[in-house]
Structure formats: C-alpha cells, structure tokens
Length: 117
Length: 114
Image 1 (cartoon, each protein chain N blue to C red):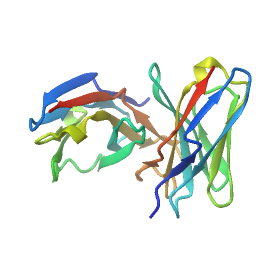
Image 2: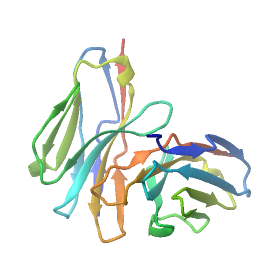
Image 3: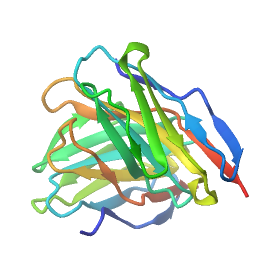
Image 4: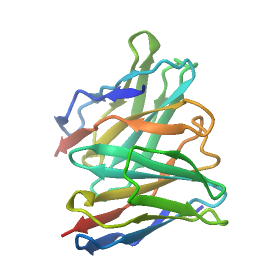
C-alpha cells in the first residue's frame, strides 16, 4: 500500500528565509512518481514539481529545489528566499502503477506554510 | 490552453438532497479523476474515468457516482446527502491517466450540507 507522510503540520518563517518541507513515502513498487502541489486559500491544487523513481538528480527551478533520496524514501522540497505569496498548504503525492487501470495519486496530509512579512 | 474548470464553485444543500458537480478537463486530456478534501480526512480519491469508463474507484459508498461524456467532460453525483459530505470536491485531468503523467487540478467545488 502507498503511504505519504508529511510530519510537519504547520511551519512559519519570516519572509526571505529559506524553508524546507519534508516528505517521506512508502511503496513496494520500483517505478513510481513523486509530486509536490501547492494549495493557496483559493483551493486549487497547483502542480509544482514531478520526479520519477529512476532519477535521483536533484534540481533547482527558480526559487524551488528538491532533494530526492531513495535510500531514505524522502522527497523534500525547498523554497529559497520565501515570499508572502508562498503562503499555502503544500502537498506531497505519490503515484504508482498498481495495475492497469488502477493508478491514482496518494496525498500526504499537507504542510501549512505561513510566510511572515 | 485553458485549465480544468469546475462548476459550480459553491453549493449549499440540505441533508437528503442530491447534487451534481461538473468538470471540464484540459483540452486533449481524456482522464478525469475526482477527489474529496475534508479537514479530517484530507485528500481522498473518489474515482477516475477514461473514455467514458470508470477505471478506478476509491473507498466511498455507492451514493457517490460519476460519469464521463464523449467530450471527456465528467460529472459526479452524490445522492442522499449527509452532513459529512460537506467538502471541497476537486477534479483533475491528465492525458491518459497513466501514473507517469501529471494530474492538473481545477479550482474545486465547495459543497456545504446543512
């Protein structure tokens, strides 16, 4: 069974600080995908990043970076130089092909990030 | 390209009524998934449709149903509403529903059951 754990329920940082959101996952599959989504107060889930299980290269995209480590089953997400507009709930999600036609996203419980001006 | 759209955005219903929510996927996307989000249970998968067929279903009672039309638009229906059905209902679309693809979400429909 899939499981995604986001141990940080709420985080508050002062604007311009860097912040890292933690995500730990469980899966028996060797082929899977990991995602980060952002949910602002409006409610829409906004896609941020995707990483497949075969690619552990960590990257930076603008102010976002991520650290994927299969050895520890972690997929952490960092926002550099945080801004007030980054305030939102962030969800980590896992997608694996359980079988044909049985593919779905499993979400963590989310981390509420508040950026203090 | 237009994103995923959902209508209505807000709904207020009373217990026992039924409700129908609509979702229009991104053009070219044929897979539509529905999720329920509540403070207590978080984001939970309801079902997924592809080519007018339900391929996958979450652990929800039969009061929750859906369908997909030939243009990939999807509707979900909840019959005999209960107070616990109050939630944000999110629709997501992807090209074929493969686990390799990114699901793109709509703004959601906020349902309040009184």
